[in-house]
Image 1 (cartoon, rainbow, N blue to C red):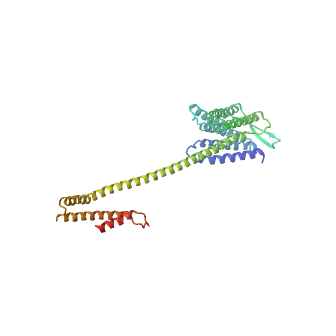
Image 2: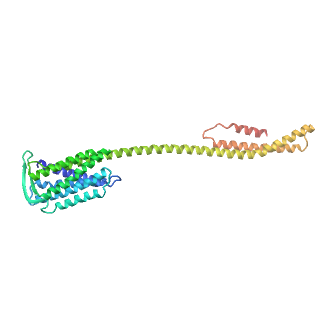
Image 3: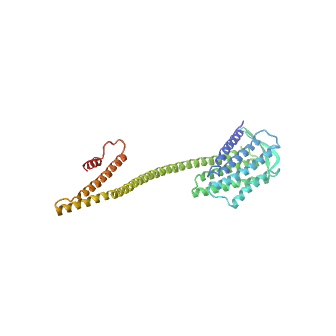
Length: 352
């Protein structure tokens, strides 16, 4: 196995692997542009596989067909890069841009016409220092023009990437250099084929350069989005934590407010319940004071006033004991200390 065959097999494996990996990823939200990248690397792998016809011993009649197939998939490869470039720089293709893509497909189909791009004659030229021999088909004038038209697309794409670099698009400058270098290597191969120069074919390297740069850009983009997603996730986590604390504080404030409202309602009811006995005792005491001031002694019916006052105070005592029991039930568990109001309530009851 010589060096050109090894490089061709390596490029085919690389392109097939990247295509198989990037196509499923293109279904992820925001990554639909990888579909064009997958097509670009897949067509590059097939076009590189067609170059094996110039380095492996195949029948002479198959050499022109290998060249035609290579030119066809090269046109599709360029069209896929043209579409991917539009998504990379965030500038969707308009009607003219779509025309370029379809023109590349038409040029590829035209290259398959027998005798249009390559004639029937073939020759073998060797590269002694590389230890390789190439079987080449004779290109026609139309074939040279077809290749020139196809090669003009990555040149235009390089200018588009350079303009995107000036606008601040990340990694667009690297792609501009890669497309320029790849086009230069393709022109080198066209000159070698046309002039039958004893130089190796370098188009395989021309395919690899943009693919490697674009793959690196996609990995860097994935890393940037992963970091941004992690920052957003952390921000959401902090926001949820702060919101939870706010809700807990609001709930605690609501509980305290409900407690205060309950105490207010209880106090109003207690005042209403105790106002009657207190008014009765107050009225009876005033009556007794007036009797004593007027007569110096109590009248026989004043004993009823005293009984009524005692009953009223017993009622107040019962209300006090109910308050003590309620306080004991509401106090935290394990609190063995009895409220002072309890003993006071019992003392008042026993006195009464």
